[in-house]
Image (cartoon, rainbow, N blue to C red):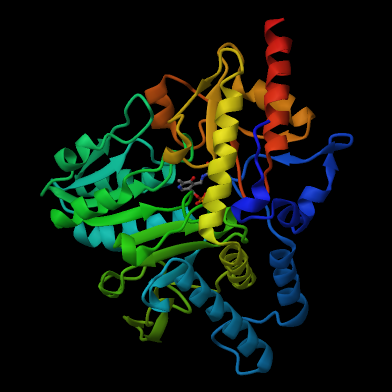
Length: 417
Ligand code: 7TS
């Protein structure tokens, strides 16, 4: 194994692993758990789990309404978490941070509240072939309703976005560009700043799907100058809560998405006055404990340093790419250069169904995902119905990559004799 002194890269992975209770157990008859599915959802450190426990044990109360101490504490901590998220992504104001259920809901909020008021017949919505279904289907629904057209930026043989198409496809017909910063299949890091700048040059608005980037690399909404950004707390060590960032001027001009309590200031028989930002977009009782837990997760990541998180994953991905390429017949999707991708590796072993691969890996305690990973158009592009996918986070180590590669050799033996 090449010298991979992870501790010198800024992360003390051995100490990090101690923080994750779930990693301390064995599964399937004494096998250490090898969790390689953080793209789907990350594991949670003890501090996040403790924050949920503490909320329910000590100050469980609804937010923004009680005048008693418990409710005031719940509100203060929930709103403090919002400010932690604001700082984490470099937003100008806490009013630009809306808590949702997940990335999917964040994108749908924009599609309904902004999209329905601004997209008209003949307009174009530009997406990329790398998108997760969450950043495709809401735009398909909108485009159908408004008779707008969807346009896709394609990928090249390496699995990189076709940069030459950015200027050609984002034109004065474009109303909105919705693009991922990192693919959840190929790990491809996209030229998101170029896309955002081009969108603005033609007068379009740009939404960034940061579900796979915000947890794994430094992300700053002001530096990017994106109009909207969607991501999920559960993929970044936090509980099940989502985030939508939006530029204040845009959010101010939008109508509410979900009507009900919390999002109003006044209600009359025929009409209502919406609440101020960000609560205008948070109808009903929010996921309070989850929001508070997200604040703790953000603190945890901030203490590690997002540059260090990225560096650790860059090392591990480089190591995994070199090791995996030695598996006979394997086809790895996406760029083979670790600089161009995150720690997400989807692969195909011809003749062996990804579900069989995942099932055999599971017997050894290794968790990988098998399927289309909610990116059917991208799989179609590769001519594959499904792939196996291993993904890494701050708690993964080279030994786990070794175990994956060894077990894949066994899988080949079982199927190919
Ligand atoms: N966008 C990207 C790039 C994603 O990877 C995901 C989830 C989503 C949006 C949706 O996030 P959610 O929190 O609303 O579900 N990706 C995956 C995955 O790859 N496997 O399970 C979920």
